[in-house]
Length: 358
Image (cartoon, rainbow, N blue to C red; front, side):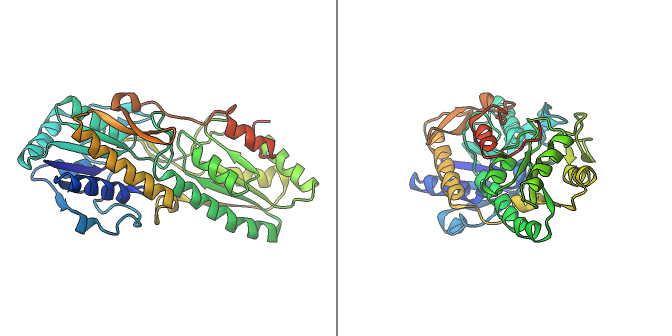
């Protein structure tokens, strides 16, 4: 048996742990593993790939990024605009099938987020045996309670807030940290809570700048002269609009700028000196946390076991501390968003964190 694996979409801490799990589990079964470079693009003839074995993957669990490379562009993009689904051309799918047939690959493991799994589902519908592994630092897939990469991402937010806290306190400033989170605010929520943020602004909870300003005024009146604000890049302004940096012609628009906007408005409304910082791709980089290493490895092992059981068209899923599986079609296009009335948000409100909505 020979199986293939590819990473697609944005990079994410823990991808190498998945590769390690796949190669290790396949080796115990006597299988060969082919790793395709740069996502689905590696499937195009003549094929861009490397052979993977335990010797080649030893020690990669601690590495960030992916030894296979990845891309969110190219011939296989199946998500455009605000999550709209596009059909991968039959000609491209047939070329991929030809490469897999030539390499005698019996199943393909696709490690990716919502868009990549949508492409994987289309390949599966075309007759390619596919297993999906969920990958997103946003932790926003409804079919799994946790995704690897999320713990590393919000840990980076915590580290940044720890550093910003000391400079904010020294200068009695308000500091605004913009983090990733297009549709879902889990990184901002978890990172903000663990990092001691005083205000957290999320895509799911509409906010008004006057409420944010009031929260800062109350802190000043109580003798707390510094304030930390965390804002997700997808948090919407009062009129419901998003700040963008362009794009959108062949995919979703690039978000950015809401942190600077919030900082300027805070200074305007309160007179308090305010600075902003955008964490950006620092959230994606670096070594994965211990949790993400273990979860990634478990996901990779489970993917191999699903192939052994012939359960194609399935996605690895983590629920109630167990790694199981669901149909890929049940996983895509269904985001898990932060509930404004959920337990985590209620806990944050109970300790005085403002979400700018009251």
